[in-house]
Length: 250
Image (cartoon, rainbow, N blue to C red):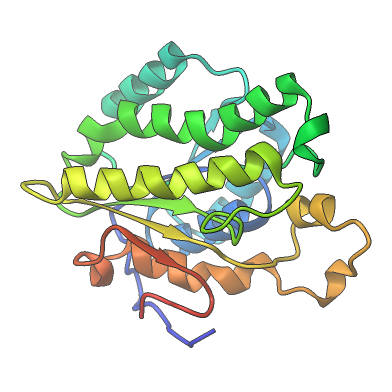
């Protein structure tokens, strides 16, 4: 991965919402964004995990973060509009939105894939990013430099056996990103991109590859710099693109 270091306080005064912020890459990115001066809105379903990230940000002297517990699996459209209304009241705008939360479910042949599992996985990985983005669009458009970042996967560009609804959702997520980039291209300050961080030492990876020695994988922190770049001012002319460790935005 090409080395890049953000300038000090590169995200100062930015308001950034990160889903799945309680664990893995979401946690690492939230802490890094706060270190760069951003006010981070931490969204996840587990309150204890969110409180842990909040405490770490506070101990490091970063801007006070906000906690918003939410289970994307069961969230309704009203839950998203309520979230957007809360953000409007508390912050007035949104400068960054990171769709990091993901649900793997299980790797299984299509012939044996449980229908309820299919719906639940699509809900978390595809419907939730759509609903959250739609609800927050007006807040993003109030920013002078807004970035929406979708976390992708290597199974998005081309389907792979057994990846079921997760693979389909990631493909749809990239299509959603490109669609939004085209729609936001004219007369808005909103840009959208996707980033596939590759294999990382995370819970999701362990579920997908239980026989793998996770200690040999990179820590989530190694995938943070490209995300910081795509959330910062240096990437404001980049939109509708897909990046991964072999194809970085800088």
